[in-house]
Amino acid sequence: MMEILVLGATGNTGSEVVKQLKEAGADFGIMARSADAANKLDLNPNQVRVSNYDDVETMTQALEGVKKIYVAMLLTLVISSGLRTR
Image 1 (cartoon, rainbow, N blue to C red):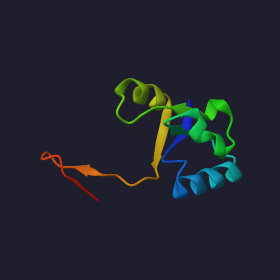
Image 2: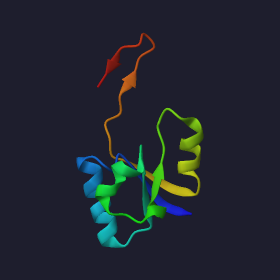
Image 3: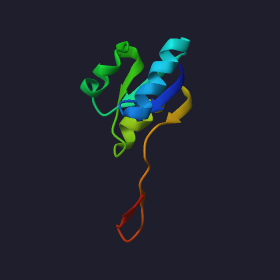
Image 4: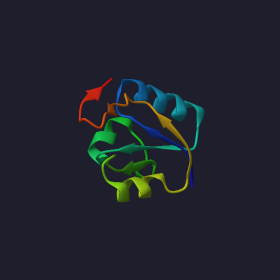
């Protein structure tokens, strides 16, 4: 069980969120594309869930037992024509 899972934790905003959660002693973890990407955050291994947004199986595993999600990343809207907008 994990109270909060931070998505986008390795970016500028997300890493600041992680810093503040650590300082507050919060029960949290992060989702990253690789364990190497998460190394700079200096977390316990049980706080890191490795997943890719395109992989339903690993996303399902990463979200298991999570109560809240903090999304700290730019979301890109993909229109049916294949064009991307921000």
